[in-house]
Image (tube, rainbow over all chains, first blue to last red; front, side, top):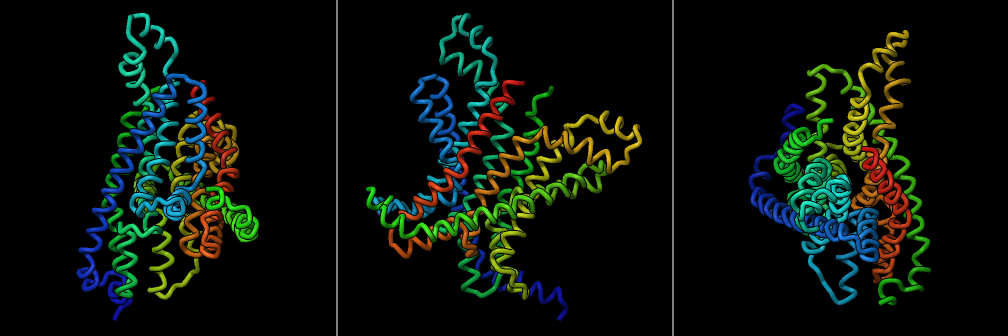
Length: 226
Length: 220
């Protein structure tokens, strides 16, 4: 047997791959569910916080900054472990899925709040004043004048951050979430063969590579021409 | 509540374990940050060659690692390679994974920095008789690094946070040690302590970054 044949026999074993394909596919479904939940809840919570912050209520802003700083400082894996192993001691027992979802959503919330806030503050003061003087309310100014410009500025860093955090769904495997990596790892130990792990790795690329390429396109498309 | 999450006795008892973890996290960061920077610098210098035959594979390389979760990369090295007869140990695997993964991120940032230096600078430097390499080292890179300093710092923060992944492959860093202490004491206190340590260690960096970002916006 040549070296390549031996390599293929070990790492790309057709029998093993065929047998564990359904497991990996079910992992793909869990990863997609988790990723969508994280993206939708995390970004909307971040936007909500940034809007709240623009109202300019001092004590509330300190609270928002505190929460944002906390989740920017803590490694996502630490947050996951804290929620999963810590909360049961307080009588709450979130599942691994819920722990991972909450943790990553909090982290994405923190980063997207910062990004949206930076976008909002980048809009010149004069624009606020001009919009208000034409008779628009605070809400209308925010919605129709400030946010469209803020979004444009926010999109490149936001896509970057969102991808980085969404990839973190793989961390769920530490708290027994049956996403791709979890399925691949258990299939690997059951079959004593690394082929399922190769399948898992391929699955991640199939899921995330198009997103990364799309993000690259969006970044250049939305880049502000100076 | 305090008895469960911040039990003073458990804090005292588990502190030596957690402290050893903190020390390892610092050491690990001191290893992987320069490693990632070196990887990134290699990528960025290669990308500054404006040859499509170099640039396209590089872009593919960077996108690959942007799409690939670092934990999957780590597990692949740690649990996959032994099947090829290569057992590297958790520590070495973390080093390689960070070199590849964070190198790609640092590379993107440094490439953007190099691109931000006007071409006239290189031409001027070359016309004074500096070689291509001298122009890069003394003229372009210092300005490039300064232009993307906030991004470099922000990525470094992420890299330090990412060292927590070491816990999955039994590298005795902060999170790993805290979980050991947790299973010894049956209490979540050590994990809460570890979280507080991470926060105290990294919060100043987060604050500094916020200020740098605001300053960059004010300049616009």
